[in-house]
Length: 356
Image (cartoon, rainbow, N blue to C red):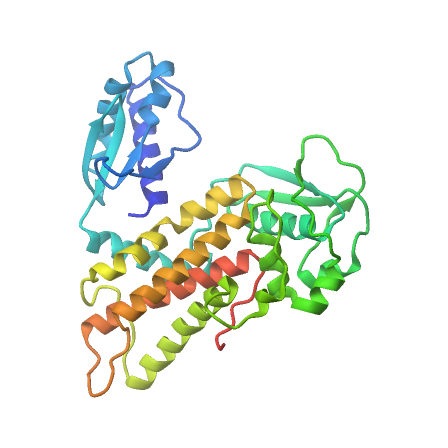
């Protein structure tokens, strides 16, 4: 069970409790679950009982007990505890079950893994300054919001702006003064034109350089963005994706394919599996907070975990070794990592080359 699925499960429990008149409260639009902090209980925790207690006119502990009864029997839930003043702490089923669910979801949804409809009822307008970083950031925020079901239009304060924006994949729906009820995208300026940056760095490196830092931080746009080495985060992310594609080609040459449940995953796979499971939540948070830098950091973390896993648990046999069930499972995890990397880069407007 992924964090997004757990959130929906808890929300469904709230609706059931209200429908059954066990709880008299308004059903929230969403329920937030978070990984348990060090020293806590279970895999995930949720404070929804504290959120509902006032409206329900009940102590938070009583609300938590009502919800616990309705969540505990759901598939994928191993144990539900009520802790502290009314937190729900969830322990998911055995890792193998959750691992398979995550990898199945990635395989089924492809590069759209992590997309959803949480914002399907929202119609939004973004407005940005006539400056390249603002334009690229607004474009990335548009992509993130649309991936969560929102309808989005983007406007620029002055127009038609920089004619080179189109080479960066930027489109603008309208120009003019800022209308009411809009989100203004105004990161720290890049102090360079799109043409200058494109000539020196190319579209992919420009977009990464503009989007990777938080909007209130300066965007480093040096030539190190072009370095083909592990010290360059953009190269590392794209190389990780290219390596996953090479593994698939290598396996085909050896006559085998991936199988997520062929064998249990080693401990070295756990950090990568956790990141893949968390990916939908990262995308939704990035959309809600208008923060594409969160996606870039997530991709860096996935790439780092992939290389650690790859080095500890090679997905391909070596020498006279024959392909085994472990290799098929490892390959499935590597392919899932590649899918997440490609999908995340696409949301940032950056290409994912299969060969580097």
